[in-house]
Length: 293
Image 1 (cartoon, rainbow, N blue to C red):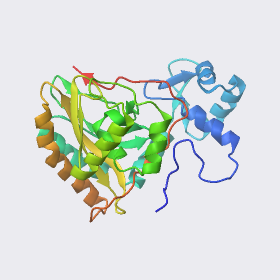
Image 2 (cartoon, rainbow, N blue to C red; image 1 turned 90 degrees about the vertical axis):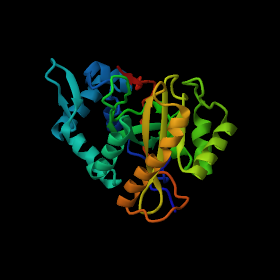
Image 3 (cartoon, helix red, strand yellow; image 1 turned 60 degrees about the vertical axis):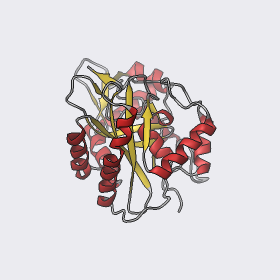
Image 4 (cartoon, helix red, strand yellow; image 1 turned 180 degrees about the horizontal axis):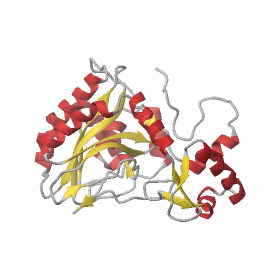
């Protein structure tokens, strides 16, 4: 089955790309979770576009409701609500809209820990749903954040385990396996072995791999084609989450992933493939989605 989405940054055909559209996309992607509002000058620096070009693009985007002035003073812009509507359509189109939230809520209620749902975004995990634990010390993350590398997170490894060998090779070859925690897997052969074990047992574990105080367990979510479209995880502090406890929780996480998969029309197991969100060309920003105390 042909991939519905091309690898991040790759064109699926020989069609010449429209430079104006690329400029608009670059401008919109300059806004991030940690840079919610930007000035004309800041946008020019972030995109490398002349301020005169940025100004003309902003005027058109304002007219379409895709950006708006912030009210924080002259010359500051933020993304418009029309993009929120379009973003909701993205999740609904993948079957990952509000209708799956009861499954996420039930898992959070059962465990008392933070539950999140993520999709593959290049070689990172993009979080699209979360319910945070009510406990004072808890795992915390930001919806829309894509700062967590896939190779050192439970969600990410559950997703990478179902990527084709060719795509996995391209993903791992494009970036170093950065060490983020004491147990981060930084050897490519070791990571491939780990992904094989994940496919066999049906779940993945983050054992102090993203940080020295976090453990998590995740399982893949499949659509009606049997393709992996997301991964759901439970994460908590290592002081409450022993490695043994994480493995004991795995059947509950797998059951929740199965419930979401059934809602998406999945009826039988299969090798599947991973759907990815397209990756922003603007990089270099690292958010610290770790703890809220």
